[in-house]
Length: 433
Image (cartoon, rainbow, N blue to C red):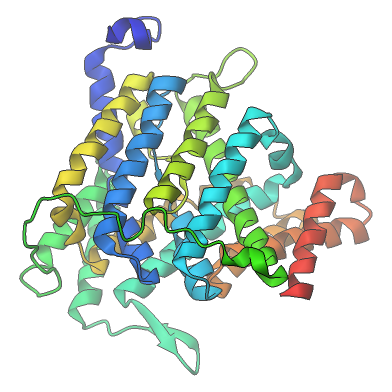
């Protein structure tokens, strides 16, 4: 049955290879089960409920990818997008987590419609490549910044805004140990380096009093406190509507770049592109993250996206949906191990945040630093994200800088109508907010 459904022989693979690939993918991205609750709980949401929502949304999105698109890609709530949810929308803008969940839900609905009518590519093409690459780099810096902040490596300071934390404190030393260990494992190309580093750091934290042992109640945490908790009060005021549009736009575009970039990159690595250079079943693959995001918001978590860690499973030989089906099953099984994931302290999740930030830096190699109409907007995009603690502000500054520089240097032919419209909308943000 598996052979016929996934066409294993046609894809030059077998059940054993696909299952091992699926386990490898899970091992490389299972850190999200600890990191996502850690990040989103900063908004006041229940950590246990977030864990359950994270595992369920990852399983649902990955199952759609496995059974419909039949591709070896896994999905889960995205890094960077969860940071924008918690620290950008809720803490930075002062909005409720219910408001943020509503934005994610609307994003999922829009993505479904955009995928059905094949208009995602039109919007994606309106964003300059330099800005797209800079967004990835900026999110990487932002995530690393959050990891260092949460672990106490950097702290607030009135005189210099940020300052080095207490390097003698147990939490900071534990985080630095975790970063060093995980970095070594990554350099040695150990599969599941992020998860292994997190587990070892957590265990080391027990005798020093940083890791608190759980009650070992293996019942699945209820999501009743966060599921279907949408906020529609914003529709009553013009300011509320404009805020929702701004937040929704950011979720929409960051997720779009994340998913499309991952699909193209991993498919290329796996030699899965067809003779026209296109991804097989790409519409179904895009629909997987659309459905995952919509259901994820209803369950109570941030935007679901395709994970670049899927490349680990592909490197192990994964070529079909059986790989992602294996990963989805493991996410379901993880539901019954919540105490083990929730006991992981911030000092142990920090290494994953910092080093995922490193991984997201690679697109900087694609920037043309000699063309200032390209490099300056890219620089504003990536630097403003950590400095303003906002992914949205980075995109706004980058797009505005791009349009202004192109217009006033005679390179207006590089601008599309859609790009100009987007810049106008961003400029209006400063006027009306």
